[in-house]
Amino acid sequence: MAGEPQADCLFCKIVAKEVPATVVSESETTLAFRDINPQAPTHVLVIPKAHYADAAALAAAEPQIAGDVLREAGEVAVGEGLGETGYRIVFNTGSGAGQTVFHAHAHVLGGRGLNWPPG
Ligand code: 5GP
Ligand code: ZN
Image (cartoon, rainbow, N blue to C red; front, side, top):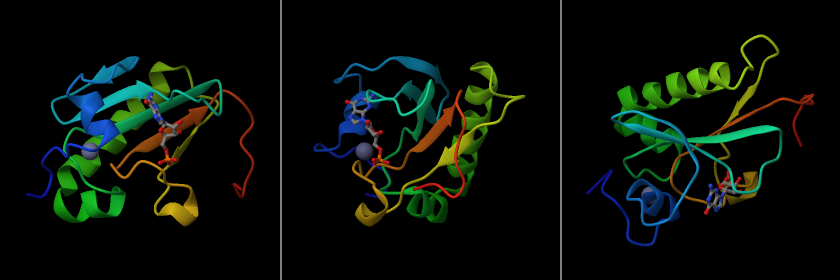
């Protein structure tokens, strides 16, 4: 069923605490944890606890939870001290755009200069 945990999904395993992660914050519907291979001084992933393959699928099925992910991303950024300097929220979507984990996730990046347009 849509949104149900997937046995072969790394981020579902992190939600289930079967794989450890450095958790930054958590809500009823979302989990924020540090990226294992950070690309900036702050690099946090914010995911819905429910399984959807990407951000668009999440928004189509559960718009409220998509909003929860965005709110959590902003709160994480402020909590990491990025509220003044700015930060970037990225949803890689599809393998051609660099998506490697097919459980929707926002990257929250900051703490260094961020080029535009991104590579
Ligand atoms: P994507 O490439 O799909 O946009 O992002 C997936 C992210 O998950 C990558 O930045 C990668 O470093 C991160 N990642 C992959 N495996 C793990 C893991 O086991 N733990 C954590 N915390 N992050 C992971
Ligand atoms: Zn999943």
